[in-house]
Image 1: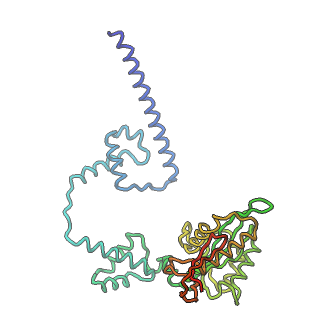
Image 2: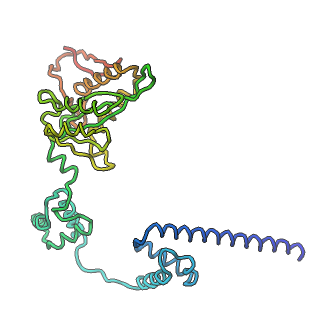
Image 3: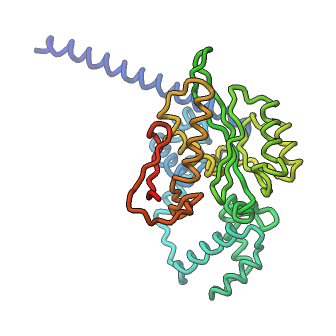
Length: 354
């Protein structure tokens, strides 16, 4: 019996030793990895949250100071043990609840943040006065502390929100962007870039041109047409929103701004800042271009013309109260309903026959 058990004991001891060595290798790798990551900080202080300190303290106390000295790389063993002592002290410290109205203070704090965000020019005193109008008598320092705690700078340094900027210039703003189309040509499948401009208030869209190569010459010609004093689409506009794409050449910007139209670039990684242009791209793709195989540039231009005619006079827009951009002037008296088709029935509009 003993002879049968002995090999099994040897096997178990061997496996245990292998597991211990494997775990030791894992620990050594993690320690070295932590040292490398700590070296990336290059002398910068590592800031840990209270939850992170509590987790390290709880785990570190189980190891003891000697083992911590071997594996701890982010902070010293004494620091981890000190956090553990503080963790115990907090467990047995009972702080009595302070009298007051936390619900009202939370409401006041929310109002302060809202007023500061919606009114970038309002300082501490102005916000204090607005709160007084609502029946909240707070000190100027309370306003300052609330804004500082949420990372909002004082009025002179507080940037205007994108929404505030749009509202201040509504009716004078246009957005510009590109969309691409794949066109079959004798040279194969070619990508065409279409430049368009949209008036934000009316949602009217103007296509400034399509080309497989939107170079400086193409952009300069488009800028001259858009800013023509007689029939340029940007006539009467003061702001043109563009993204940070490199296709907006210096020549394009110089011509547009020379005509009195200020070019405003969208914030980094914020496509919603030019949301109306983005929405048009989505519409023309889903409703038209993605449903067509385009053979040649003429086919592309015809598809664009047909969609724009449908977009302006036959398509209802939710942002305009589900109305047409250019409503029909004929009276709705006929009894027969006629369907107008474009692009072989891809786009349809229903109207009463005269």
